[in-house]
Length: 383
Image (cartoon, rainbow, N blue to C red; front, side, top):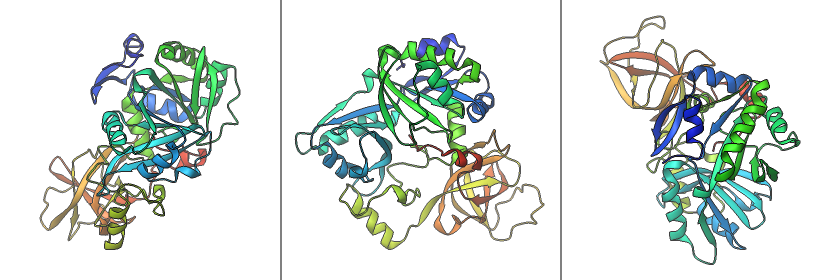
């Protein structure tokens, strides 16, 4: 599958990769260059592979209250919230952002790999006259992220966007069509996500790149997008989140409204009472090394001195988990990652060891986000 901007990516010399069936730009230049452009100026992402499911009607809010974990009635018109959909056993079906552009209209933005699954799940549990529609084929999505993103958007649209606050959305005529602009994103920087008809995607993409050139705007691929979200400690479905991982294990308690009845609530409450056996935790490397998904995580009974080099032997070590995401941080210049580990080892400052190609590398559990500077910029919610 291809987004409406595929030819634009090819024309810009992008390296194309297949991501859950979609031919997407991995990078245009260097991943680190694109990553730092977002941190220092602005970056433009094509995220039209994401799914959009529309819910309309007077019962849409009550239906979504049962389907999602967060408090839907708290979501006012013109607002957005991060939320989850769970199985009956508490496993995560998807993590999403729910937008409410009108009183009886909700837009659920879901991960590309899960669009059909979530659409069918919602149809299966529809109980009344709620209208549920997959709007993905007709919708394009652009993400404009970075400290200069407001200036770029105002230059491209000749409209004022400074007043749009974090987690707010606004409908507006832009690029010759009506678009939905949201102050959300997946990078930790100030930014906007723009939902628009697929027919207008090319003109909007070109218009934003042209308007943003004086501000240092760069097109950005999936490689830098992943590094940016990793620096913020944001989870990625299929890595930190899955049907075998519950919101409590993922550390997403703040997005659960356990006072309402949603699918999976009873199982989550039971797990909460029993105790959580494993958790997603952030870590940073002490030894030089780049952690990758799937690498084993160990606790060593008798660790060598702190200044020692990576060691060969796992003798006396106990495997306590696995790396779910990892890489070299372009901003911090060191290896960082997240791992699913036994709960006793998920506390900050706990020493762990990562098996990197047969050698044990020292690391420690740390609080997230890894990239602290972005916090002061009111980082946007996961999407």
